[in-house]
Image (cartoon, rainbow, N blue to C red; front, top):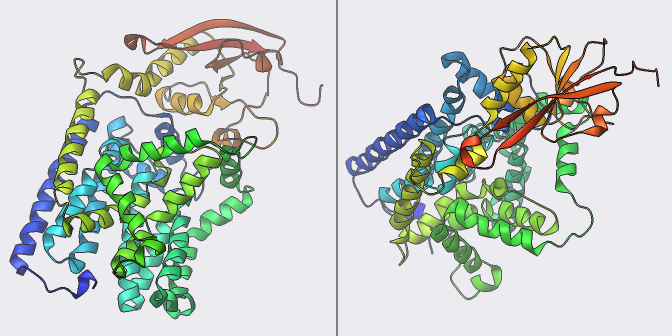
Length: 503
């Protein structure tokens, strides 16, 4: 089997340009649709989105749980168009479209026909996870873009061995590390490639390899220094969230993770990916012709994150999107397998299926109440603005020294939806090291006898209230009354906290 790069081009340049123009037109239309949904859907920010917005108000080179790029992107967007939910989310749809174009650029020189590159990019745009994530602002969105650029640049570097591609690879990896520490998987994937493709091992001791590492390290260095100064909070958070305690065999968690991937990547595509990867196993490959280098390359940057997160789900717990980087190379790999094989129909069928599902989700978001699932969506993604307004109303009736939140998600929501409130917002401190961003930066410290207002998701948080001389319930904010399962937040007035050293 030969690589795609060795095949003659099947069409003229004019024909290839038509495929590119078609992709740009479709990507522009889909992006405009997603921006319209973001603009017209009345859906509150998720707690993580509100957290990233608060970070953007205080530009830095590091934050408690994530690198800084997400905050920089939001800061740029809100500088341009304001602090509304739509403006915060607008970069997501645009970045996804850019990622699709990068995948087109990656595949186009390697394709037997320009339609292959077109369908790779279109398949990415229509992935179920992309339909959903294009309407929220998460760290996965710029991470996937950085991964796609690194995937392209690293392949070109291996084929052409030039300084330009080495620098671009380093920049992409460095930017990815400033987006999410998951970008470290790229190095793990590179190790897999060196193992299964000996022709690539020259990079490990080459000048170009040193350039890649040096550029990436230079870009990542400020965040690494910030982490060192602050005792590596992200590392501590990751260790805590891994929950590697007690029973370490969780077949149910593994099953949930694997089944969830059919929803993230699409049922037909994920089944094709599993079958294709299985066919490339060493024991299987011995019975077949040797896989083309392009397929080995793509599999090396797809399989390791899936295997690592699947193993973690078996030993501990995971979220279904934690292996999202696998589907950058995975999209290219599966589409090339399918369009060059006997199951070409799977690609357009998947695009159509995912598009129908995506449009359905958007119809729910835009408020088509007659559709099944509307209330479930509202239950998960509404109510934070009501909480903010309720707390502002309660704070206006009395003079409090501070409003205290006993959860990070509540603190983030209040900082956004009660941002016009004059009373300072503070996070209830933890015993020992800070456990979240606000305990690191905005922990409450008693400085006077002025009463405080505690906002709690749970009734009677006595582990806090018992520390004060007196406390009383002064209100309750009920959110999401239109969906049948309201969430209640309890407001407690408390005073008489002992001064430091008095106990």
